Image (cartoon, rainbow, N blue to C red; front, side, top):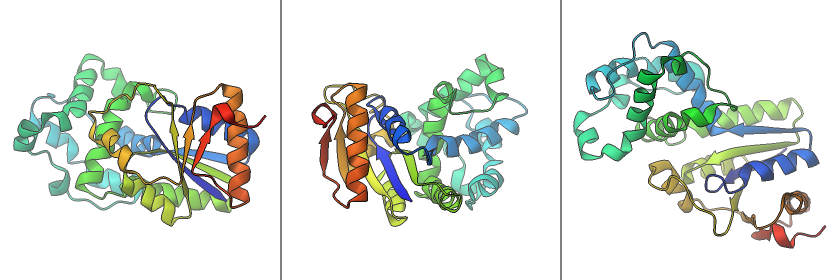
Length: 253
């Protein structure tokens, strides 16, 4: 099975490139770190009996006490409450690191229904701040490889069921890429020249530029160009001839 890990800024064409690959290889699965993180987020919402005060660290920590059991159950990770508890001093000194968590609790306060519906690939944009914070915070406090160790388990399961191609999206840190590469993955960056890079103040988004990639896809063409480029990339991988740079606008038809 070919394993492709995809990185690149938000809204720069990763999803379009993955969809183009799916048209070429229907025996493909698409995994996202955000969906793995959403498993944890959904379990956190399920145990929430009362929405905490977003500015009260003690109340927030009462909620986080459930996390060690949730992590073991959902992503096979071991953690203690002391590892994950919020430090009020750290929040005061580095508020931007906690801003998205607080924003999510504020959203729950305004709309409690958000905690009662499952986070899926279709509605995850509404929960993006929480997923970003949870992903980065637990990687820092518990294990840098917490999400991609679980993804590798899912990749191995897919291999046993006959998948020919596995796309893993959402790589944000060098550790993500290293874990996937050790599992036999190839790391691609999809980048759209001149396009705005969103969320660069977010800690997990800033780390993207430190990822060592095997190949860069410069998404500077049309959707048809993207399809031609995806076909070429897949052929080159199969022929052990992957190039370091592809420009979709110059892809052969």
